[in-house]
Image 1 (cartoon, rainbow over the protein chains, first blue to last red):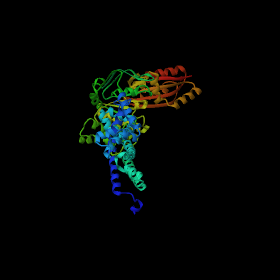
Image 2: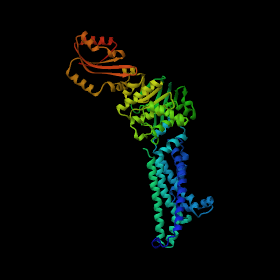
Image 3: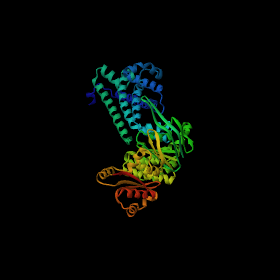
Image 4: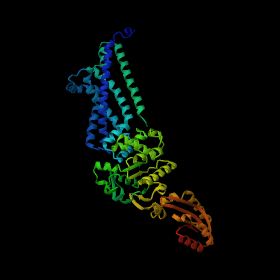
Length: 222
Length: 340
């Protein structure tokens, strides 16, 4: 049955590509989550009227974030090839795509983190200060928990963007479903391979969206 | 317990400088419930925030429970703040935590062990009457219940002072009364000094011992609640006092009487023991006058009752004057509001 419908699909390769896509997505989402929260926190805390108000630091971070957000991803990958070679030792394979994926997604997520933190009620921060909370306690016990639903829905959106980034990274040699769809599907003129790869990407996106929504709903007690 | 000396607070902004608080000196005794009243923009919010240094005064010293707050470093200030609880108009509790965890929050900050936290939280829940709601999230609570969580949280570290920033302004009248009762109860039970700011005179009347009236950043009048209610000096204080004793209908009936009658409209003000005296009966028996009661009201303050009675007195002018002299001789104040 599958033989006749998808004559050119090598299921073993397809599965391997799926695993590569999931691997790239998982590692880059995790790193983006941590790095994005760190950057977003810095952006928020150094902004005017906040606990680490510092115009200079805020300006620098905002500049870096805006710069990386403005560069189209496909160009960012090419620009970062020397970095990938330096860190990973090669420009090919799933690991080599990670620096570019993270550098592309973290600034994007950092802005969402900043917005989420700005939505936290100022009164709650004031109340914590009135109780004698240290800045560390305010960050970890107030800001992050209170912003968590927005942080989770933000990382869901970012994760889905990352899936499509992995496909682009695939075109320049990172492997995964994008790579397969391009090399096996497009260049060898096997539309059935492209179709299956696309469907698998859609399934990954759907799983991410649903699990993100469910998590957000479960932790949102507002 | 609290000593403010020469406090000024100036905000600088693009549109110029704003002097929010000007040369305020206040002294609040241990165990006192002290109210600061003023319209919005009078500087009372800034003033109460200087009592725990959420706002740093531009000049002057703030001394709370023996600590000169402005001289403390960050770390010492944080531990000094644990002795000063604060509750807020919009409660400011964490929606991501249950009632229990919200109350435990200040205990986590001060590094209390998990076991001791649990014990203390149970006590506090009982104190503020939230039994059965321990595991609810704030979104499942009413405004009054949220403020009870706020109060329990503010009391968790056994503070010496409780600051209330318009704590009842977002609540309906009935809930306001129950929260005020809770505050009075806590004040008596724990001997806690309470400082509150409000724009509602009945809050002052109901629970405060001392009051300061603020206008444009200045404290324009200060004293015991009974004294200020009885002898308001400044126009703004009279406004606030009249909020309680002179509702709209009163003004209408005055206008009506002015048009139709001969005689004098007089307002008697009674304090303490005098509220029980049969003054009107006395008047009618001793003097040849008719007394028509327009309106009367007795309010209870923390220092004793306080009453106002508005009457219309008919009779010949010399007799009325004699009658009023008699009333004043009884230690009751008589103010002629209107005569024909």
